Length: 339
Image 1 (spheres, helix red, strand yellow):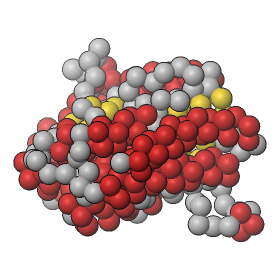
Image 2: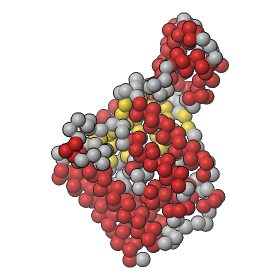
Image 3: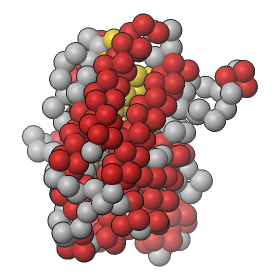
Image 4: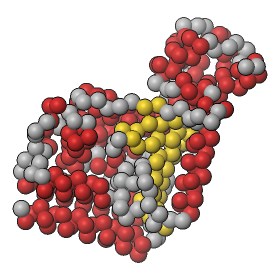
């Protein structure tokens, strides 16, 4: 490979590294500290005067948990994804939430920043604002998907999920609310959660009827809150409307009549794009491959162009959309209350 090609790859790697580290961190200081070199040596690597060795690349990738494939994947037909499976123990799920929180914090601190979420299911962040709703989702994922041994044979009650996981999920939600986002839903987006609750009810997997009632009621409350977010084009519901004059709009919601087969999330983190894809219900894999992300961006732009904006002044369309979803939730609530 030519020295010019190596220089391009090194520059691209360092640019992506700069986008990944927190905005209040210096790339020079990070390189000097992690590679145990002088600041002058770090500057020479940034300018391309000194090559970054493979050992140094591996050290940086391991520290920031980024895939080695981003070095050259843009030049080939292959796409490298980074992926970490949640294993069958609670600590692994805590690590999953911690990583999700760290990723969102990096996105929040970057400029520009944006999340575009093509939602086959309700974006998971929203569930985390409601303790019992979050507990149910965590229980479903850990019990029915990850087969956590400690939950085997247990019925659901909110207290079975550790409080620290609920608190961590709430942090994830709060950070997401600070990030400008576009969500694209279909009429089916809420159905997976409705079906999960219905299945657990039919299978006798709720410890108490009151637990099931509360989970469904919080689902209705969550959807009502998202409808309000769409109306005001902002995820901050705590701030009264008359105090929101200088607050930027940070939420657009679209209704797509084209079905979305899988959760597909495109993130802008400074000058870098990252594409997250759902894998095995709630796990995800991601790539920074430029061509792949650009193709995803074009697909999403096309999807948005064929969708109906139900944020802001689109009162009728928004009301009709959520009315249909809430009807299904109300039917489930009536079923659960009947016993």
